[in-house]
Image (cartoon, rainbow, N blue to C red):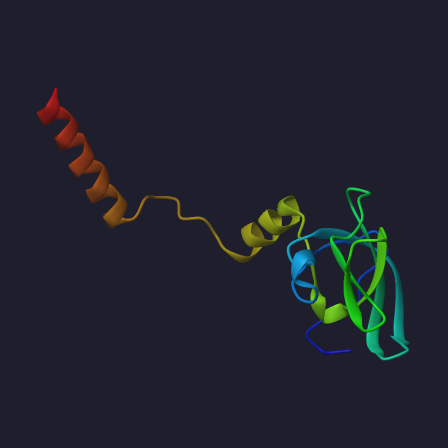
Length: 120
């Protein structure tokens, strides 16, 4: 497993970012981590969130249109989706919000106010 990829827990929702072209962008859920398994270095069993079949899967040495709701894939092909409220909380903790608007913002507001007065 690459040091840059964390272990995904069952239930984690991810987006497929590599692999079968028709599956890229699909949101899936982790079912199980197999780790080293067959020719896979870090295998995960995944399933579609919608309950539909995967649009495209490997069967032997050929790509076929979807025939299963579950699949085995490599970790590097998955990007976990981030809970936005957790991300926002983390951002607030790392960065203090300015108490006053910047000079650039104040100048922009003044130009807009003058333009609005000129038009009316």
